[in-house]
Image (cartoon, rainbow, N blue to C red; front, side, top):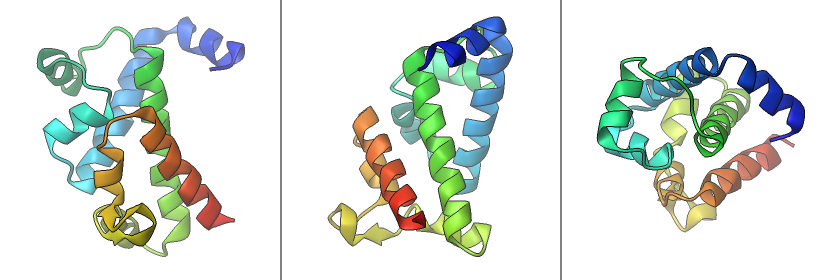
Length: 129
């Protein structure tokens, strides 16, 4: 992350983490993503940590976790721009896609690496033009 972003995040890491996770969990709820898959998308934190995060118990997040959440937020936003309704945008994430070898976008992202989230974000940004 650029230095300015790191400085902003460092000002109130607890609040930043709480807001980021709240947005992440809201998106996961809309997409109907299972807890185990959410753990994968977040970079595989331990189960106790994950469930504490779901309860809002967090003091800070790693740069890796913040980047993952940022990608998810960007993907969510791009889908909202590409589709006329939120229902269509949210359904797309689980539909097979030829660009990803007929896997759904979610299945592709669940391969777990940051690269997969980045690929999905770039793909959707390219579709937006």
